[in-house]
Image 1: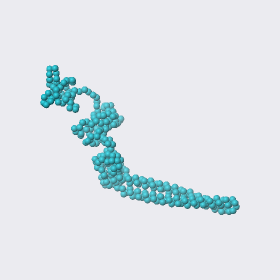
Image 2: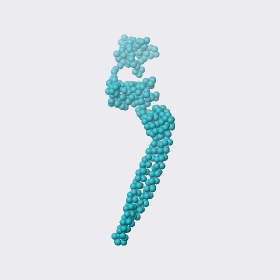
Image 3: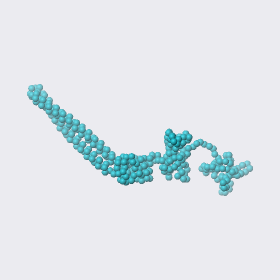
Image 4: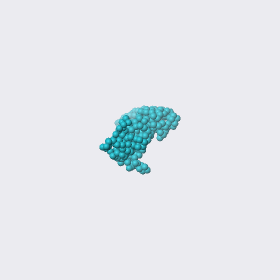
Length: 322
């Protein structure tokens, strides 16, 4: 015994917390990848994005200002360095005093320190700008999460949210059946599992599909670990596309135990009078009526459980005669 299930059952959840504004689908709707499914209240996410963009703009202004400071520091350093070198040369020539050289050296060292501070200021401003950019990116992603889209094409199986509900990560809002086909999941007891192999074509009977022949499914997966309570293995059988077949239906997986020879005669060869069943058999002496006991019907032929041994010639009822 087993249950018809979708090959893939996808839980649709929110990735951010928010109030549900719209649920755009209902059970039975077919959706394509990228279609909008649920819309959440985006006002908080929009405000967060605006604040982060303002912070990014402020950080960009600080980078621009720090670069201006760096340019001025470079100019001051270049001037102080040139002056210091010139004063050193003049001191060697006994043109200026040592005190003047020391003054030029002090200005040079101060300009060098100022240049280092300006370079550090630019690096810090750039780091803040990069961080602000990441915050903007996160806010944009968060805003995008307020519209929940279908990741794969499929059919809506369950709707678990309505407008006004609070959505948050971990809470299922919708259930989608994806994968394109259905399968039967059946528990096969350990005494039969040796008869089932991957790729086997097995018959599946779904009682809800009245008047149809058994379905032919393909064994896609066999779990190699038995349930310790039931001593059975989970077998998944891919089913063909059949109108009226839906997930949740009850089904039976037919596992062949072996082969046997049986006697079959056309249904029209069996004459029933009350509970008695007879078949006309041709013998050397002519046609004789033989009592038989019948079994299952196989494609307009009935199984003879007793009364015939096989190989006899039987008569068919045609138009009320033989």
